[in-house]
Length: 327
Image 1: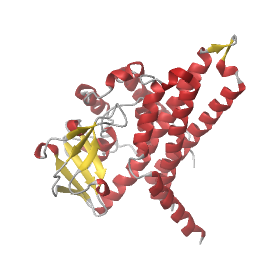
Image 2: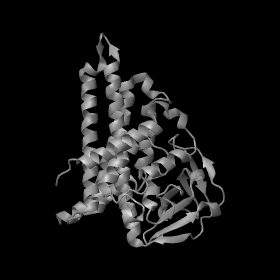
Image 3: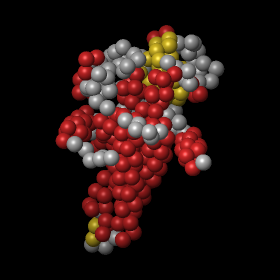
Image 4: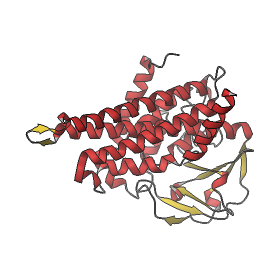
């Protein structure tokens, strides 16, 4: 299978990267801490076609596939784009106004709801909350719910709140829709993690070239070279497996899309967390400070690692399918 990006995909990648650099500059990332979603930037993202990427062209979408979506979300992840952009894209076929940016949609797995209560990122910004269960997808209009209670977030760029008394909600998708949403969400969260991994490598490499010690850039020291080489291997491995999972989801051809998605999520999670930690180490004393970029990369990686299934769940799934294939 050919995984080289074609000209159209490269142009898509560069267009999204330019948009993110303009609207979400990383040199001002600390200013985004605890801030609500910028609705003007959200509307511009919708105009760019990001939120309706997978909808058919006749339905107001771009008519693209999972591979193109992975390319886009890798860039969104690497630029630490705020807001529930992934859930809103996933909701586009199910919730009117999601693709156009009129509705901000968040979501959780039904297993995370306890006695009608759930903790979710960007709770105060959401218009719709999706709950994905084994039998289908339900939508809850936040205008009809009690105001969420703010909580302290793990990622300072992702405000968190608790909703209570969710109620039954409105059914918007069946079992097949729930399975596809989960699988696609797993692949695209892996793409965001791969983007984080790549960004951490860029930050560490640039600093290693600029920072001089003993009359030479620290990037010329063997120990630092080895760290950067390991970061590079983790990044390209995560990218390759994520693109492969997206391709399998687009055209299974006998492969298991759920297993491919789980494998990509595992490798990308490890790459993002390890590379963010390595970037902190390369930057030394600066890397540990709150407002430096590696701090934000690591905390976003920790947050994304637990979206669309925890590590243990994906490990069990990959292990069980491999065991089944061997027997």
